[in-house]
Length: 233
Length: 242
Image (cartoon, rainbow over all chains, first blue to last red; front, side, top):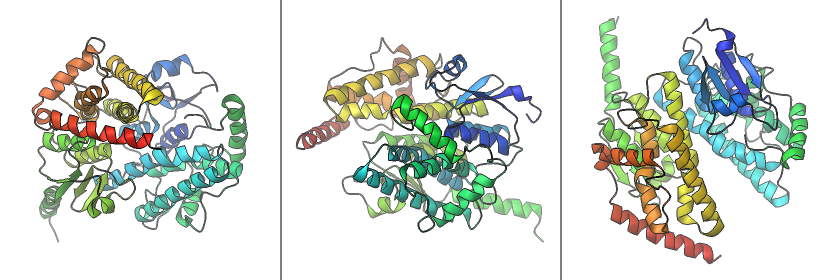
């Protein structure tokens, strides 16, 4: 496995997608070289349609010609296949269940609500921001329990939940900027503020999460195309 | 100084005492999500205590152990709670690896997990058919049929079960199609899973319900019909009062 050529591993994706970012960070942590095949905005390649016929969505990991879809499933696959590299999920089954729970919470609750902030206005917007903030406070509690004073949910090193949630940070900051709101703050989520800095500074993450400005510009393009800053992932 | 043999003995006793430790399942008899956990525990031969929750009057135990969603099922293992049915199943699979429910090969595991996620993403449509009316219900019916079509075309292949020769996690995830969908169809008065349109799924349902653990652990069909019919009437009348 360690000697696979880079053409053995391909990632179908797009630079702004937080779900694609998860896969790239995971491969970086395992020091796996891969070919990044960028999808064009507004169209889907034949390779994508063939590799993910059910959802037709990115990211798709193609390993030795075999496609795997759904970002968190891909991250677990990467963890299991490249097992000599640092592992993402903790070894204890209970701790694994907790990380899976919060990763699903990010996907089911946090990110969908975040996306709504920029199209909402007035009272509705305030209510959604409140909802997201409450969710982030729950994640702050989870972080305090899980990190045990260390830098990441996974402890000393980036783990599964760090990847799942950290991949959202680019958009989180862009949404804060576009919406004139504060989602992560020192008062309510001090641990996560610190964690966000550590995560984005990590060698495996640097350069993968796009600059806030780039995402804000991209969001404007999406609004023109679809009438909403963030379409479905 | 402890010898290696003593250390290994200590570890195996500790692990087995944890595996023998108190296991409780908070569930609700009409809920298909409850049954996912029951099926997994029974297939692996793991003893547990079942606690029936009254969802119209949630217990302090449930609220304490499922603070985020306040939902069943919750598995309590030596007092520690695990929530969300498919996360519970991954936990059970890891803690009690006998009678594996997931394939050994990482690629096959990823495929299985894909279909588990698909089940959780798409199955809600059939419950929207159940509790809505008009345009919302029409859309939900289309979504449900589309879900069945994708499963029929892509998920089963020529296998007896999604798990191959034996049932596995994907079969358990799709389990509600084998029983609860039929109840919904009867109550609403529609046929969404036509046998001739979905021959593979139809065969799978028959095979699935013949598996002894499944056959012996399903809620009574008539009781379910009565329960869900009554609940639907309440839901629809309360939505009209708005």
